[in-house]
Length: 112
Length: 116
Image (cartoon, rainbow over all chains, first blue to last red):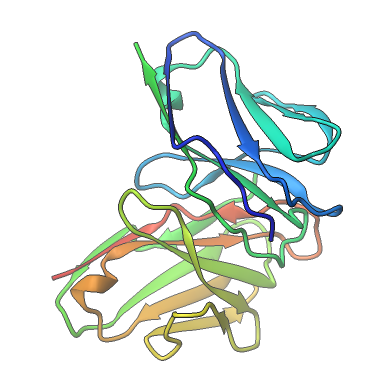
């Protein structure tokens, strides 16, 4: 499974846009990129998934360049409640039979 | 999205006792479920893959005789921590995906185990 590298932590003020970039140089052709959010003492929550170019939902946007060796999760206008750990995962992500391999994640702290 | 529940949400037990954790999918069926463990300030670590009707597959370093997994139905998987010790204290999380779909995986809320 492709290894991912993310910044360990990030700080942001409320109302700002936050971009978290993940490197996955060894991504395979059939791999998807998935981002999860985790609050303390809770299970991870799915945010967004993509394969290439751009994906947007009501929570975030995911930007994936043509070479797919990296991806950027964009959170518009963050609030204090967005303080959490964000995980980038790469794998055969559309398969419910494939376990997810978590890296260290990015700890986002939103400051008032 | 799909709902996965875990029970109990928190358990405190004495060293040497066994603890059972349940993971249920409330609105879908799952052929495969996964169990993770998370220590404070660390990432999730996969413990085992639970397949309905067959033996679980354990990750390297995870003792199958200590962490018993039973996946008796398409909506329920259980993890039993046998003869628990303080070093087993951790946050245990399960995940599932609807069978036969290309949906992503959904995680349970987790179970906090504290062994005294």
